[in-house]
Image (cartoon, rainbow, N blue to C red):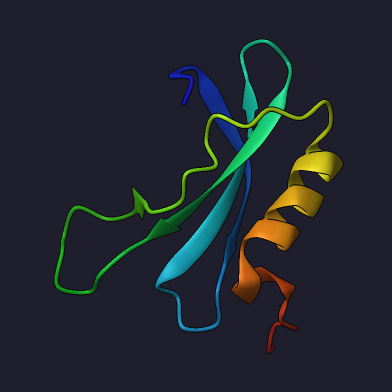
Length: 79
């Protein structure tokens, strides 16, 4: 994954232990990565998917690809 990225949106699952980050690269293209955190691990979030190198022309295209790739992201969120 490119080192120069800016997270534009982070979507957490209902239990708060996984998220999908949508990001913009320095070249203006977009991507996403699925991440996880464990309560007992103070280091925070770490990537668990292999999606970070995929590139999309728009943030919406990256979000749609994330929904296809990450099953929990397709589930309705509880408020």
